[in-house]
Amino acid sequence: MGKKGKREKKGKGAEKTAAKMERKVSRRAKKEEEDLEALIAEFQSLDAKKTQVIETSCPPPSPRLNGSLSAHPEKDELILFGGEYFNGQKTYLYNELYVYNIRKNSWSKVEIPNPPPRRCAHQAAVVPTAGGQLWVFGGEFASPNGEQFYHYKDLWVLHLATKTWEQIKASGGPSGRSGHRMVACKRQLIIFGGFHESARDYIYYNDVYTFNLDSFTWSKLAPSGIGPAPRSGCQMAATPEGSVIIYGGYSKQRIKKDVDKGTLHTDMFLLKAEGAGKEEEGRATTNADKWVWSRLNPSGVKPTPRSGFSVATGPNNRSLLFGGVHDEEEEETIEGDFFNDIYFYDIGKNRWFPGQLKGPKSEKKKRRRGRQAEAEGAGDEVKKQCPQGPVEIVKEVVAEDGTVMTIKQVISGPAAEKERSESEEEEEDGALGQQVEPCPRSNAMLAVKHGVLYVYGGMFEVGDRQFTLSDLYSIDLHKMEEWKVLVEMDPKAQEWLEESESDDEDDDVEGAEGGEEEESSEEESEGEEQHPAVEPEEKHMDYLSRTEQYWIRLARSNMGPDAKEKNVVKVAHAMAKTFYEDSV
Image (cartoon, rainbow, N blue to C red; front, top):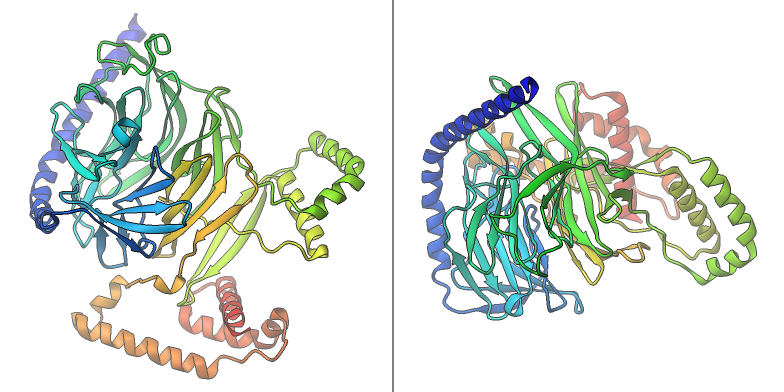
């Protein structure tokens, strides 16, 4: 009894602290949000001038992250809404609606009167009612300098058949937030977690709300049991029985003034309505139903700790997770390891497993398989008996300005062995080119249609620079053979304005920008004159050995005297490789 009473007291104390923090954040955020409301109203007045639906073919959308990508319930289309873009100095928010036609591999922009205000980090869920509905809740708007935030608590529905937006006004819903998760399940929307941030304070949530799609009413659930700690950006999936699964996520807490500590959550929970599965098919659970939290201990290989991953529901009762980032503190800087791997969670078996690419099949491989079946079978047995550890593959990508991104990808030993042996065989036959895959990233947008996963946009970082993506990839989740590039990213479309550039030259912004342009144009012209030319039929390694010292001097002059020698050499080799590939 004593222990139970102590736990209850501790729980009540935590609730009081959370309520106090929420009031504090709310007071400080109120002034900020009042400032931003005027800006939001200005954008809405522009949207109000639209009086008719206009649908036009267009190029792929501009780079963005933290938008929503949803599969149309009846058509072979994907629906992209909202998102954000940061160019180093200014934050842009969107409320544009784009439709991707899967069969034609084409984009169209759909302008609909009275859309939701611009936002990112919202949630969207599709239901098949009345020709399809896209439901959108919450998200955030940021000031152009990215220092003030407005968190939405509004609920919208896009009627796909009539192409009309409608705001649903119902009381008792969640407070304003972003980074939450929302799923549609048995005629209701279920919302969990998220965060609210002002310039100086923040709060993370672990509350659960449901919105009934028949009665249009909100309910706040009060589940029994020990549930997840407050968090945002987690994985949330609905089971066929009407339960909800939560995995991972991110939160931070203030440990002292101006010092925050982030937490990458790796725990997993099940939220279940007692009697779920016994009720009538399709009936939404109600506030009267008793919900219970329980902790899950899945088997298999769990994803490595990360934040900023993207989630979707795949075929065969599986939820999937893609990409993300793991930040590591090194000396006085934070470096992020970005991912482009897929992990599947089998809901029925309570088991995680990594998605392994099988590679495209070829006729030559099939013939070879017939001749070597026995030997390969013996090899498989050895692999089963002697599992090998993971293998780390390191790649480098160089931007137009010479910025180098190091990509680390970890794959299991047997898969790596198989990949190597197959690629060696194919190189011998000259039948296989380099396998394509999306570059590692966080905060991408995912959708699954007909068992095919689509990955759009997202971002990765190199030092202080952020690369925002606009590419589109797909992979058949049934076959898991290869990624397909549907829209390639144009590296020349990347814009990045260093924050310090606008502060140079005695705070003369125009002068600084002009100087920057002159400097870069001088560097370009110098580069054209001075870079050692590639000789006819010269191999990359021969070119590098001949010109290495030149590139090291150039890298050193760009990176400064304090840069580590190994980093200078790495950048020099990457610059030489980029110049070589552009020249041949």
